[in-house]
Length: 104
Image (cartoon, one colour):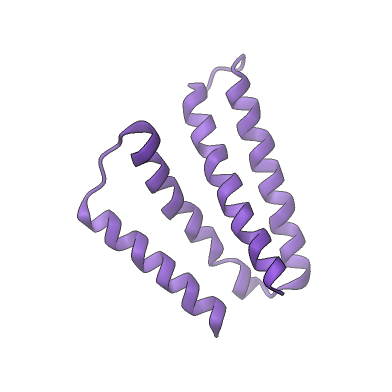
């Protein structure tokens, strides 16, 4: 069971980095970063579907929100985008909410 949740976390990271590579590619069809983003996104979808096979959707779906939180953090770290204090509060609420949802 813990392995499935680990796979979901890997799915969150690969989807988030896929988004970062999409941004870095500048949406240029000739950019290798665009294709790396597609590969990561596809791998993320594969892990997601695998987890859905064994876990209830009500336990899997909240992990989607971790992707939003991680993309915010990555945009700050990689692109220097500004985050407001409310963004950090939102990230904390997402993490706590997913934690509480998974433990029910």
